[in-house]
Length: 580
Image (cartoon, rainbow, N blue to C red; front, side, top):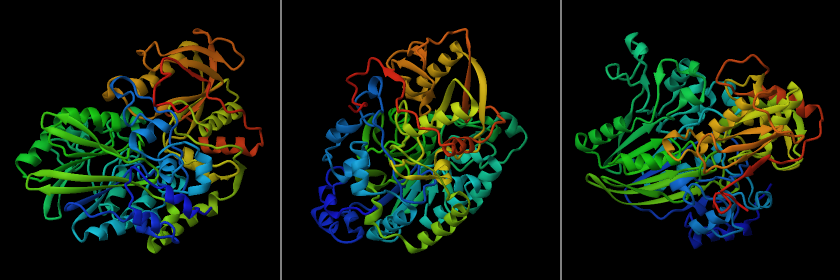
């Protein structure tokens, strides 16, 4: 698929591309469209939530991303036209395609794929060279090692190779922990950068047993922060790993570690860097999720910028948050390698004077692939093509995942669970990672693994009462829509097939889910037991891996069922987090 160069003449808005850059877009593949005016004395490049997507691809942004309470109608909870209006992005432009789901299929044909590590390497090297030696650094916000069959089969090791060649100098983590401590430490031994996490500590039992830790007296498992000399100034970078690892994932992967937001410990660390180390700036490299970061920024002073991830929100401009020490800028840099954040800092002794921030879409066909990275990607991918390259089926519609309540890819997975496991109802987790497939696209096993590749993929079937089913929906919904961001763990609503319901996001837990009905219209009975299929349980299961169940279903040639998410929303009619 080739991009029509004239379409890039419509680029405008959030990335503040110059007229010269627009003219350069008329030429054959030319990264000059990414020329940025030099500013300040330190450049931070931020990548997050790539989910092991080494190749360029498609990723549809959400059409439903509802904000509740204080966050209603504010970034990141804006979609579609409301998003474009807020950030001043022209409709029908390349940026509108990158940042929203509007006219996605038409725009995908016009503007092509985004991301790709060979393209990212070219862009990163260009932006480093533009500011000169020792004036730039590359940070990764986590979820780098997971998201594909290749990453899963190598327990993240393949992505460590790519990270080293990309030049990542520091990272934090989330899904990285789901490979378990042994694999995590093995990968970190091969990683040339630093792994930072101020909020991971040994359990009391593990500390008593002298388990391995970066700082045994405190029980801190990993190095919490690093101080970098950049542009002649001292910048502290603090790592904030995903706070809810043992809750969102099986605890057996991290039995000796405790997590949490730990904003009090974070404040102590920031104060130490400010008062004792006399740094000139403080950056938090976070995998909290944007809503959590916004609250954190109001409670912890002394942080200049939070470079955020986890919730996959592509937000073109930082959100300033006031606190007792002044203001902290909160950012979030999207996912799947679609975006690269560029933070230019004008540092002075002991303070940040000014900044410039751009969240650059990585238009794959405007960037010449870096030869060394492309060779690495080709070598790694060769092991995949031998095993997972055969066509399984053809997408008969746009298949995507990212939306608060449902996605056509998840519905297809649920259909597979119901059909292959003979269940009345199917659940699939509301993961936000996974690629998008266009209608007519062949689906290979590699594509299916890009939606399902985790270390606990086993399927299950169990009997659940109607009351238990409602409780599950209420619990997940509270995680998504709790008014206190500190009780939000990220992710979207569990996907359901065989069942419809009404959801009132603005209500309290226990009152959000109602009118539960089976496909035939019968009301779900609280005391009756139903056969429910699912996967990705935090408890050990013995069923087939979900990718095999998914592939078996597609190979069977069963007609893909009509699209429809089975969810009726209530009380959010005017919410700008809903497109259309």
